[in-house]
Length: 206
Image (cartoon, rainbow, N blue to C red; front, side, top):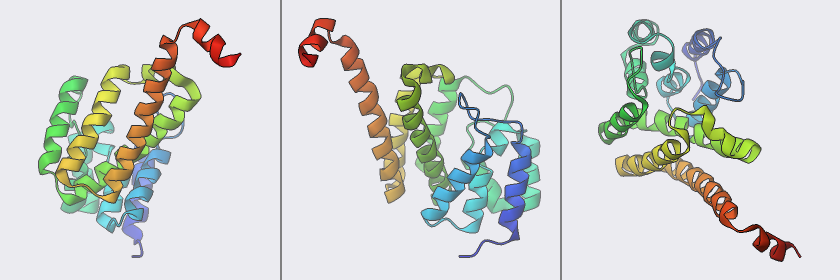
């Protein structure tokens, strides 16, 4: 499949929408995330509409709500808009409480379209990879970046694996599950290490 000028327009539109936004904690321009999600979606067989939605998946939620939704509809049509809506856990500001939003989003995945599941899975895989990388870099300080903290974030990613598998497992979902498993293993290993008395470390070392 060759991408048309619609994809180029979507990339420009997304870059402008998120121009002042960076990734939590890292300061990386947010467009890196959008490009990464679109790349993963395309690697797993996304259509052009799905790839465009991947670029715009956070636009409604983070950059304007309903007016942005209608601008997406005008520019890219109903199919793209429906996917972006399906990937959004909020369309209003201020956003509802974090836990409520996440629980509603998890329930919504049970009836989500195949296109929404593809883009959502690509998004969550990108985020899980970032979490794992950043955990190796900064350790427990990572959780300060997130509204759900350590417990909430780990709960959410575990629940996402379960919900996406129940909605229809795929190679993409299983890759996401594997990365979440690696993250959980790192966190649990660090917690166990902290519980070992100092003398035990000395015995291991010497």
